[in-house]
Length: 120
Image (cartoon, rainbow, N blue to C red; front, side):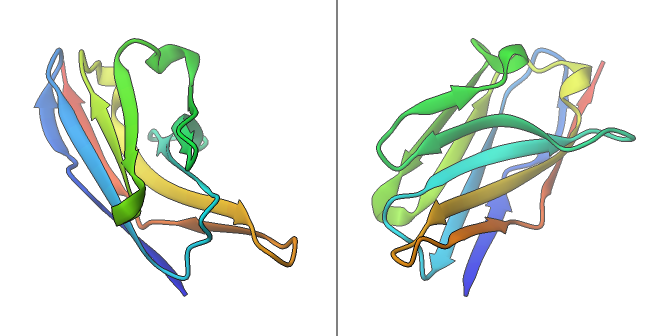
């Protein structure tokens, strides 16, 4: 069983910064991708950023230059540093982890989400 636990959300003023953390525990395949999705009120969940265990980041266009994803593989933890926050960044941020295991089975896991609210 794999668990993802997010932390670091909260209320921040526009232009401010927040750092989200997500710690994964359980049977985690060494080659994996961990990342963050956001679900804004009334909208579909969308990718914010992701990073492979090899260190390759991928960002949504709207976050490039403002958000930085990083990870500590030894701790199975992924971080999202968010700067220059805007009201439209408001939403529930979900941590994800996915991989194809040794049996060629795709597995994906989600955290319970952490609320980020940016006040304008």
